[in-house]
Length: 141
Figure 1 (cartoon, rainbow, N blue to C red):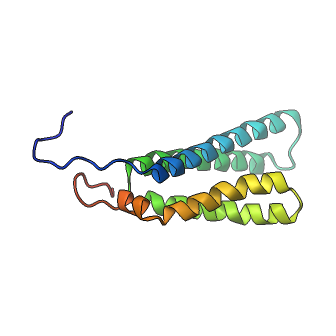
Figure 2 (cartoon, helix red, strand yellow):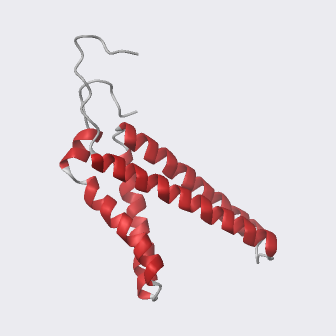
């Protein structure tokens, strides 16, 4: 659909928004990969608690789907996604630091570096402007 002649053109999407959205989607895909690995291990070994294992699998898939939703709506400029992305990246740092302290450097850095980059980019002026625009369509839900 075309915009009316008197409406202002939408500003270009900042590169930081694209990068943050991509990181969120890749984290979600990685969680879906973990869920697949988890299903494989459930099929090949006997868990101590089948109910607990199925519940853990459900939570992993639920968080992965939530991250896909957050990544999509962050790309579109929804205001609420900044808080969701911030909280998830803080969880990633909480997991990465003990992993690094435990000596698993590669995994710890893979968890820490994207989370740190997203945290830094979330507070840049272009990202804040993109997700808190007041002109045009209301994007707050």
